[in-house]
Length: 130
Length: 198
Image 1: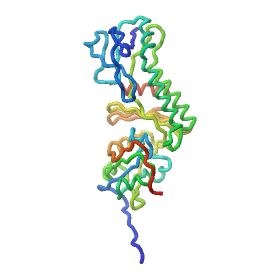
Image 2: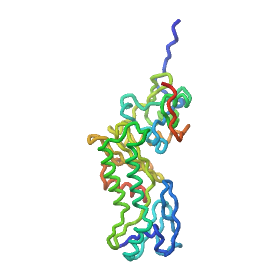
Image 3: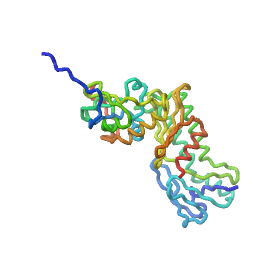
Image 4: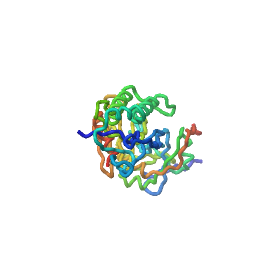
């Protein structure tokens, strides 16, 4: 029996909850740092989890906590939220600070202001999923 | 020439010992005075991070006592230097800073802090004492260093590129106005002063 293929939406633009896992301690103190595009995200976009709980999102990483965003708020900034897995998406159209420092910082500031701290940990929690 | 004594650090201008306040970073900060408390002082009460006092030219001996007794300014610089150095030791830092970024950050930050804080020991050349909010010091994912200061609606971010070909800049934002300017000691110093002034 064949499994039913999972059809992902082209973009997320409604009330979907997105989770950004805080993988560095300093991201707790200055949340905008969590929304700066990293080098390995330059091609794909800012990595977020969706369609899962915050615990599930966090389980894949050594984590200092989780911040959440709503997809439609992200879209209003002119960004796209593109899912590539059933529980993973990339926020696209963010510039890297090497390409456009003012825009990269502006968007990181705005995303951090839109985001809400779901959980902040004093100590790092080791990942529970390989 | 107007002299700027560090009266807020010691209370010397009022000739009495005054308590220091604990700051979020654990340092001591001089207690705010109202104009009524000291007729010689002017306090910008709307800004808790800056206390200035204008007075007649203070006696040189008084400045030396101020520096020797309770100068908080070297502490702020040394705390920042320790934070920069600790980036190498943090186990949660995925990428340690490059030597280039660390040197660039250290040179610019210490110079900027010192140019703001250090009081000339030359007679009558004391500058205003200031308190900067404690920054968050972090690395990016390729070994660059990012330092973030926030105060009220303003923020200043210093970005030190991991390598010479990477961008190093000072970013500032205030109520929708944003800019990034090249990183150098003067630009950083001016933006930090802008951060804590009205």
